[in-house]
Image (tube, rainbow over all chains, first blue to last red; front, side, top):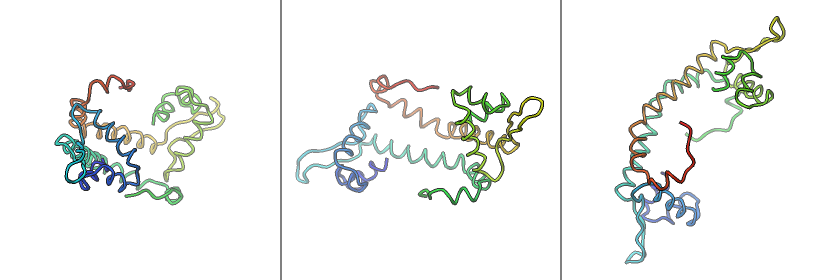
Length: 103
Length: 103
């Protein structure tokens, strides 16, 4: 999903991959896999032309991204109270010993 | 959480481990780790006595289990519509090629 957001921003699979420290090959393979997972493609790429090609999300890709980000928000909201409870009952010594997670 | 449910049913860490094809050592280590993650223990074990010891969930352990199972249900409910949408848009050829997941 992050790769899709970068493709939307940059209009290019290779630039999107670079933004995530990913090789063009890996980014391309991920997008190819995603394009085959659904009945419609998620990303369309244009070869050649004035700007030397480029890539863009299809309307289906936009909907997929919107849904995924929405699911993340729904899940967070659904378990917010439980996560607070877990945090409140956590052993502070153990919490300090673990690596920090990104927020 | 599954191990906790088996401990509640069997009253024994080793029997709970066996029910999950897990060595006693591994089951014991998992429970020990869980017991240290929170301010209160999740499982209490009694050594010796008439029945040769045994293990039971503490009230905190019961609450933890209840919360986790509740979170699973909340998450499922929160994204049910999106999962249906994903399933409806999935490439049937790809879906058939993948291993079946447990329901």
